[in-house]
Length: 147
Image 1 (cartoon, rainbow, N blue to C red):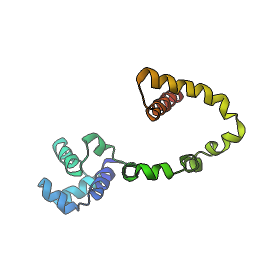
Image 2 (cartoon, rainbow, N blue to C red):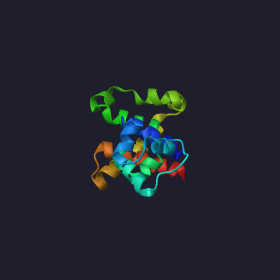
Image 3 (cartoon, one colour):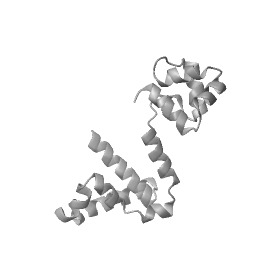
Image 4 (cartoon, one colour):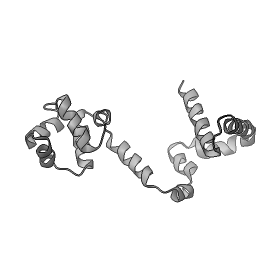
């Protein structure tokens, strides 16, 4: 996506019309339209004012991804109780089938015992709760995979 798309999506997510944004910034509606179609670009001061108006940081506005924003908002709205009801493995397995297949292909207990020891070590050394220890271990694994 380009900056114009980001500006238009952020404005729409905020529920504002081009006219309303123009009025709040003291520019014409045509100026907002030109920014959103990449005909011209807002200067840094106007960009900052747009970010504030849309409730975003300037960095977020520049890199605005409507789909990502919608996913983040949806996750924020889901209660803990509802999250516990979701079969996350099955859900992610639609995108990553290996999550559904590996239990039939490997002996999970061969890997579970050393992982339990790592989790216990994280809890004991850092004082993490079981959930926090799991999240830290997940993050460590993700970092190792990306390297």
